[in-house]
Length: 408
Image 1 (cartoon, helix red, strand yellow):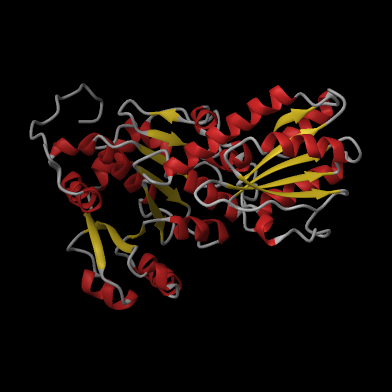
Image 2: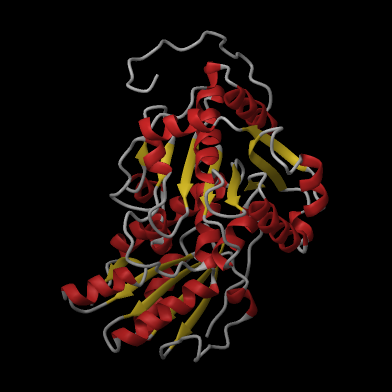
């Protein structure tokens, strides 16, 4: 294995070849040396994996980015294992190139599924590979630029089912668009049959968020566009799976990396989570700027809220970003705000009035409640969203025009 020196101020790239002929590896390294990168080279004669870890030099292991060229001719299964190991080692920051002497469809398809976006044939074409390197350099530069202007991740999670979490996530997301003209993505993170698209009256069945996460190795702005559903307000949505055939496991690290990418694309990323604190939701919470835990003022929900508060409070990083929201609050309830705060040992950040009929009607119509209606519910939501995005510069006071509806 060889290693090149580092240069300050330019990308640090690990150049890894797996199972390639030494002459081909040299040609690849020569092409990479023309880029404005600090290249740290490592040539592996055999296949590598989590069980067969190579003794990479320290500069290879600590490089910010990775370009790996893997031979798929000798053993396709081991090549796929090598691809997975490299992706894990560089946490999704690796670009994979497959080397194959044949254009066999099955080999190319399996290589693509392993995360390879480019291919090298038997004869090395320096000009074509130079174009690949230039395109890759541009992609990396774009991702780097996104980190300088990153949006906020707002996560909504219910202490139990049926407390109105999805309804509130939908309204906060759409108010950020309508009141502040922000670019907002709303993610339905439910494993199946989420209600975000139902409450917005749109079809989100084509693709879903979890499928996007599983395509992390290929994720860029162009791929993202193919997964997005768009509401008439301009709000963009990634739906949940529109099936009930069981949950496919979602890798927490891939989830966190996907959110990291998305916050570079939007002003706000709003995530509607199922009521659980499993590893996937834990990854979302860790990646969030603010976490809104929703409950209603009834005994079961308050008990569950107390348990959530205990678990979330164990992580010091959650201290400032976790906010408690009490939905459907009424002075007639036996459980007061003071009693809830005493039970959970945390302050209640927001309370929403019990406008249940108005909210149900909104869900049936697939039309979120307009912020101009000046109802108790919409006014409370405007106050909430103002705490997130700041005071509205030009709030419109005119009430919306009445529409014909069967629900009066």
